[in-house]
Amino acid sequence: MAQARLIEVRKLSEIPLYPALPRNIEKIRTLYLRELDSGDERHVSDGNGDWVAGARFSPDGSHLAYVEVEGHDQPRFTGGRTVMVDVTFAGQAVVLAEGASAVGWPVGWLDGETPILERLDAEGHLGLWVAGESSEPSDLLLGTLAGVLSPTTTSVTTILNPTETPTATPVLTDMDVREWSSTSLDGAWTADGLAAFPKEGEEHYYTQLKIARADGTLTWVVVDVWSPLALGYTTPQPLYWSQDGRYLYFTNRPVPDGCALFVNGSDLQRVDLTDGSVTEIVPHVGFWLSLSPDETTLAYIGYGDRGLVLRDLATGQERATQVNAEAEDSQMGHIVWSPDGTALMLTVAINPCSPAEQRANSIVRVEVETSSQTRLICQDSRLFTTAAWPTPERALLKDKDGNDWWMNTATDDVTPSG
Image (tube, rainbow, N blue to C red; front, top):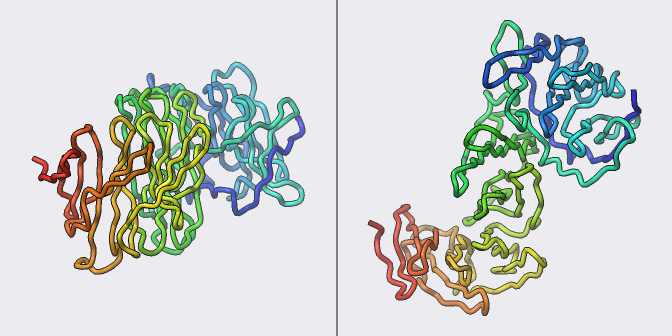
């Protein structure tokens, strides 16, 4: 057996926790492959240990790595063995790691071929390991690693008790689950997000973002994380689908403690739908972000007193503009771009955390080239917010009751929609 090589060590606090396992896990011993088209099943393992878990497909769907564990309830750190099999059953199973000091939990694949295992070393450091010395470590983007579905979706792994129905992980039956979805402009892709929160007694919550082709031929799981609950939390939210259909831009939306009125994200991540890779485009910079129609410029409301910031995504250069809020207590957000990307509008909330009778909203237009500003609506008690700018002639607003209004961009006149 090749000796394992350490490729990365991370602090325990930076390691996402894995989902809770079923209470009857000691009975789960059989791993199957099921052909989705025919329904045919093949045994992968009957469990040389007490149970099997943690199955991960390689990116091309040709191999499967999983764990066989003996007599323990925390497979990442204890006894058993880690196994890799050819999905076509062309060769024998390969034991990647064996024994309490070596067994690792598959978390993904290096260069699409070598399983990445997460385990403790002899000194108790939790790290990522690969078997053998054949390749050098490259930038590891754990968010890009394949999920349970094979990329070709011809097979799916399920951990089965032969006398019971399949049990999916994570087990969320005792948690409050929130879900959201977004569809690409051409309808070819859907992005489904999920957040699960403990009802009581637990200190961690779970988030997932899964992107799938509408025809069911491909699925990428780009976020699959357990995180500690603190005063606030974050969830992965789709932000923008590229015009050419190749990318999904998403952001980690914080839900901070306190009065934060306009929050839709914090950073900018880009998923390449051709291979599932995730690239961080912009780190955490603010609470409201909006991408230009040509995907070259990010507009955001910066932290602190930075105001409105325009960032060139190619060069990283930024230009900050202070928007005149006409009030000391104000918050900005709901940035929308004009169709040609030459201007944007945003909402300024006056006294946003005060009683309703003291609140008001303004709408401001900013020219991208010159940063010149025009106040289109000034401290209106109907609390209009900018929602969209679909045509050059008019922009869509929403009032405090959720009603739609159209604003004529030439005259600033506001009329009810419909």
